[in-house]
Length: 252
Image (cartoon, rainbow, N blue to C red; front, side, top):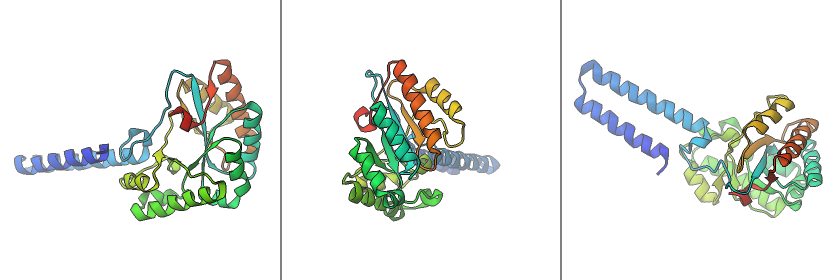
């Protein structure tokens, strides 16, 4: 059972206890407090994937090998992704790309290049719509299933890893990952590269990345010069500290 199931059971038992053993206004206050706490827990669990509230999520790799995984979301991008792939090839770095299905359909050659050059490709939904997390079983399967089918058809590789947009989940994700036979992947280093200048992103990663870290960055919608500056500097600085870079599937 997930944390969500345990929280629901505990909240239900607490409400029943308040109903049967509470009195007057105290009982009402107790029930209101339980409901509020339950709603807060639900919201936090939906927002923070690393809490494993609705579904287990891998957020770090194994330790002892001094490896770090670079992961990139929201591509493929016709401008940034090729420039990033060129850099990774020059530096002999393998990475993981969580691609949006409709972008894979729009730029199939870039998606194929990701796989052909030894990188791992994962499922990041088909449209990356913020309303996705309000979908139930069939709606989630339709959205992630379309991405899964597009990536498989175009690249010849079926994703085994799934990363929800913005890392948001809901109670229906356990059913979804069972249908698709995938593992949910999170991260332990999130430098908010889409909102911060390159230098702040670099400082954040260098300060927080450790053995087994999974770093989330974005190639989709990012200026090519920004993402290459970030990744180029990180590769140089982290290698100087003795770190190597690996695909996520080989780290976990």
